[in-house]
Length: 439
Image (cartoon, rainbow, N blue to C red; front, side):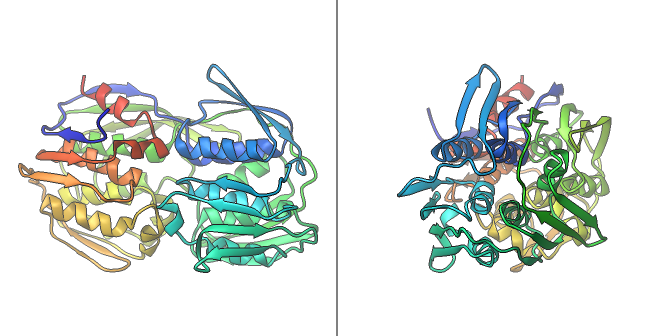
């Protein structure tokens, strides 16, 4: 099967109802917490992507039994101290920064050194941002170039709690420290810049010894040693990041409507909705409900005839960090100049996404000015292209691939987009839904 997608015409108008795959962040966290539970946890709509399967492989290497029955995943948790540490163990996080960073927090008391590896993209990312605070618990690390994978973690039987200031707005770093605190006598204190709070909500739902005080710009978190975790049966809601591709496609298409069912709308994730609504995208959230501490809703979207530029408030950066490539192509069609700043974290993702955002805009013929942490986009409401565009050599970043598909279907031209298999990381069914919308 070809790994190149060819698109040479815009999408026609559509009026559809779709279901998007399970939330990736919740799927990985469920796998890790279920592995520590006392008993069997069951999940439906677990995202069956490369990142989540890597998490399942990792816990199986640590002695945890996992069974799939039809559309249900069962994890037979071994308890908080149930991991079986073997000599010469290697865990492969593949492309998943979430798995790679979070699991280190659960391995800080490993009996034997454990090697953590990843794919080419993950191996370029900064792991010292978790190794440094985790080492303060008493664990030791040996990183490649003092920063990268492969790394080795040397656990300690004598862990001590820490005080940690998470200033980047990284949910991965924060969650890793929370997991480490669960294994440590005493109380670990975290002052964390606002970021995704799935870990905290799951811990609170499971009645683990965690306290969270929410301030305007940061959270104060206390986590004590956890002795027992009850099994967690979980119907994973749809992923908002994955849904965002279809929200933007609908907004940029002509005379189209879309409903996306049962999507997780955790406020720490809805920056993309807030930004797009300010730009004139017609989005309505209906059938809101709370489920195990998380907020879910159906998302209704309609085509937007007029899109407005935005001077994007930085308060939305963390809650929209995975969707900025999509937001940039909406800005390309907006009337006026859009400005986004303090986005240096974008270049710490699977690929340097801020740079790739500028590259895609250049290929579209949209003027932009990019710095190491900002981008200014000169929108063109009449944007319509007819030239040839090739997308390749982007570290197989799944979001670059999917954003390119949305741009091709929205703006026209002749596109040749390489590395279709990149979507297996987060959203294997992406092209299936694209094809459904085109029927």
